[in-house]
Each structure stands twice: as structure tokens, then as C-alpha cells.
Length: 222
Image (cartoon, rainbow, N blue to C red; front, top):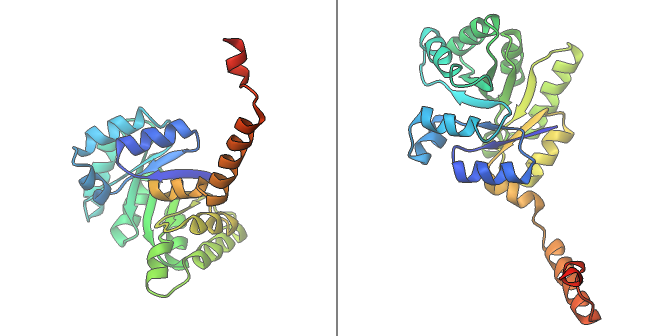
């Protein structure tokens, strides 16, 4: 059960690293563009913060271009995972990179058939986008269940990386349904540990302590 942060914001990534709950990072061209920084500069900073897998996405549309980009990206760090689109060209690149021992994350998966082909191509991870499926009236979490059933029945090694997470419930439901990894935006991670009853309970504990007239252990040592 791994949690990745879906971000290219260095401040956000440093914050989740300090929390100690982040196992990796996923990025994409949109997130990099929002960061306002150079692609390689951002990745170089991230790999020095998070020791786990860092997904870096190619932008070429043909397999040869994807492979060339991948070969350059993996020079940055051993933790770099090449993010490829689930297209014919992306699958070709995945097969090639797998043969070279380069880890891949095949992204933009919206069906079990696509997940099957990603696994056959040797993908390290496949990324079903559950939130985008929900947006068009389909059941994104159910796709996780179906992919898990397929992979388990055939002893597939490809890991299911649930993406396009829109709520804390998406996170827990994805794990319950068999996801190996969930990558989530910073704001969703914050929502996971935030609850009004937790805040209310903590406030009550502090008030009761103050009313007891006792001093903290630290105060007694001074």
C-alpha cells in the first residue's frame, strides 16, 4: 500500500516528505508547466527529496522519440520511472524500455483491455484515471477491481497505480479494490488527516488540561 504525491510543486513535495507518508512522486506536463520551472530542474530537485519512484512523462508521440527521451531522463537518477501514454506507440516504447530494464508507468488507462496490453508490454505500473471515468458517468473504482481481478488471475506483476483522485474516499476505495499505489494531489492528502471531530476533540483535551491546573512535563523540567 503505497502513497505517491501527484505534484511538481517543490514546497508541497517537501511538506509530504516531512510527514513521512510519501513513497513516490508522479508528474506530468501539466504539473510541470504549472510549476513554472525547467523540466529537468524540477526532477533533479524532486529526486533529492523523495527516494522512491519518480514518474517523469515523455512528450513525444512516436515510440522512437519516447525512447530517446526516456534514455535521457533515466540519467538523472535511478529512481526515475518513465511515464508513457497508453497508445500504440506508447506500448511499443514500453516493450523496448522493459527489455532494457527501465521502469515504466503506462498512463491514461480507462479500460481493462488497455490494462491488459500494458501488462503484456511489461509495464512496471499502469495508471487507471478513476476520476475522469467518474466525470463521464462511469465507475472509476470498479475499473480498479476489474484490473485487479485480471492481474491476480494471471499472476501479473504490473502494479496498479490509481490516478485522477478527486476525494479521500477515492483513496480508500482504490486501496480496498486492490490498487497497489494511489497517487493523489496535495490537497487530497491534507483532507485525509483532517476531520472536524479530531479538531473538536483536541480542543476539548487542551481545555480540560488547562482547567486541571497541572503543568506540562516540559514545564516541570525548567
